[in-house]
Image (cartoon, rainbow, N blue to C red):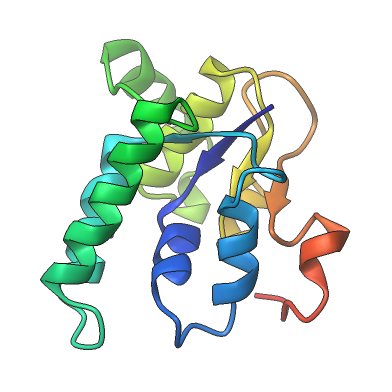
Length: 158
């Protein structure tokens, strides 16, 4: 089982003050997510957001990056590759959902889901991912932690 990771879940898992910290840590624990694919755009956003946050900062960013590297080395995480084909898929998503104005990171995540034949997305961004449809493999995305009953108790709607 493969799940695409968006920035929001990784950020919440790093921030103990986040109201969804526990659920996001649980979804990353492995049993629910399986193998996690992270795009380079998510990595860049995550580094910037954690590193520039007063409550977290550069040391927390490095710790998160080390953790991702360790999980990648163990096979639990895959660092997705942004190439011309994926960029073309992302631009098609951005064009199709122009009124929704998804950013490149979200559009790349939709493309990665097609590449890895999954509809599972770890994100707190329901506004985009409840509307956008997978390019293949199903009619809708499964959004974690919201769509997993074992994780969704106490998760406020976004």
